[in-house]
Image (cartoon, rainbow, N blue to C red; front, top):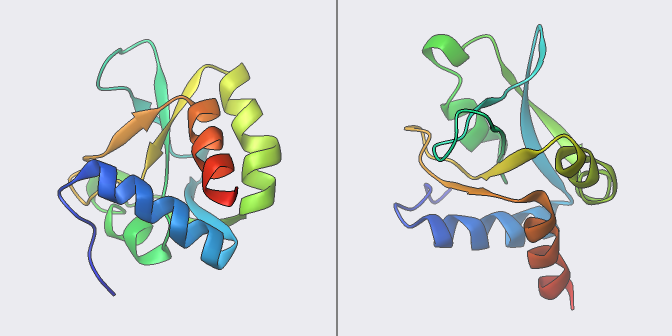
Length: 120
């Protein structure tokens, strides 16, 4: 499998295409719930990362993230329930972050629009 790119836009496109192909996205779940971390742009806002492949999610489960394990979330459930929940909770979505936790942070509703435009 092709590794994630250094180009965050490419990783976003890949996230959308692969999530639509497999019908799911991958989150990290640990003893206290799902992984969150502070946004790069604001310490007041949390980001919940998701990946298009379990291997990408597993790659960040090191050091302080070693308590997490990748879990699948059905794409339909993600778009219908998680997106609205994250929007309501003012949580951003992290998309296909690299092992260095580099990647896009975006509004959940913006991500849903990206899926809508891709689905036509």
